[in-house]
Length: 182
Image (cartoon, rainbow, N blue to C red; front, side):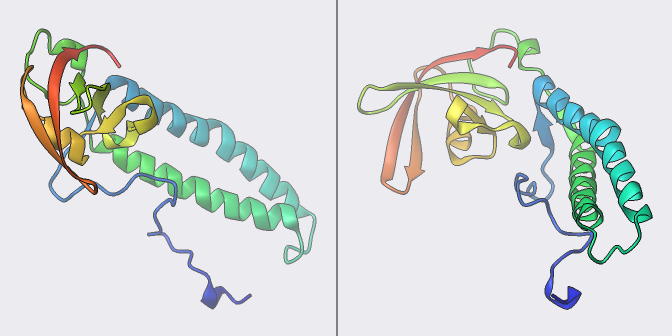
């Protein structure tokens, strides 16, 4: 296939990555999330990339590169790693680390809070409000720019917040707010 029909440029965003930050918004992140991004960056930069460069160099020394799978796939993987390194570097440079454990005793929901809410059916759910790069909804960690987190921000214990969902308006009562290391 001709290169004219493939989309590979320096500006391509990593397809597995989180969405871009809204314009003018800080990249808030917890210390644990910041450390995970740094660990991933270090793993790619210090371990995976050097090993891959060795493999590509060896494959290139074998001669014909047009039919050399190690060379072709190695170069493709190297572009993926470099793209991810650029993404992580930008995220780490713009990160504003906020430690929820430093907030102390606070009865209002802010970034880093772990909030227990009760819905109209009486079911309780607990969510931790974290940065975009560390959100894991399955584990109860939601991004601070998600609709649920936006509805909860600045609420106090006992407040009822309204969340607009595809199924309609849902009311959630804030049962407990705590700040702890995540």
